[in-house]
Image 1 (cartoon, one colour):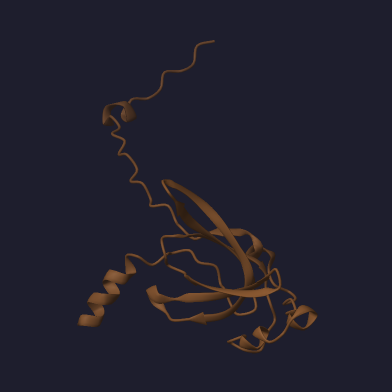
Image 2 (image 1 turned 90 degrees about the horizontal axis):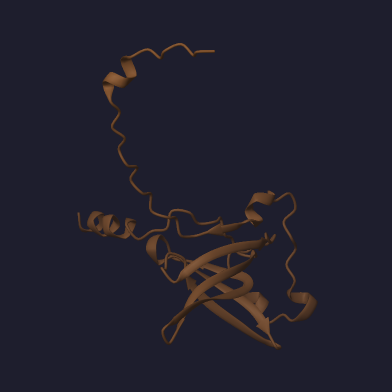
Amino acid sequence: MATDLVKEVENRYLKKKLPEISPGDTVKVKIKIKEGNKERLQAYEGVVIKLHGGGLNKTITVRRVFQGVGVERVFLLHSPKLETIQILRKGHVRRSKLYYLRQRTGKAARIREKLGAPKEIFDTLAVEEPEPQPEPEVVVDAVAETQPEPPAAE
């Protein structure tokens, strides 16, 4: 009973439209950053080395090498700060956790591209789905519908 209540509350905050992400994929994640009173988007591009958790707590760990230093960042997939996730390449790997990439540099750290991946996955997928606006009700006069139209005069 308690778990049903927790799932019901979590379902309100789950994002509906998430791309199919797997380890080895090269992704570009855009995060909302607040600086002072301004808000901007910051892009972070790298290889997904780990998927973790489930439900509202699902995370991905993205690794990239910046100026010769490996940087890993963990993103909460259902966070309101996460704006978009774009899959740039689908990687072909045989592991679920790619920790071995931490010891590799240069060409040894490359991941083969998955051949035959559908091209739709490379489109930018907005994570946030706009809330549907209720359509205004249109009241139609029933009398106007039943009257026949007069013939057109020439």
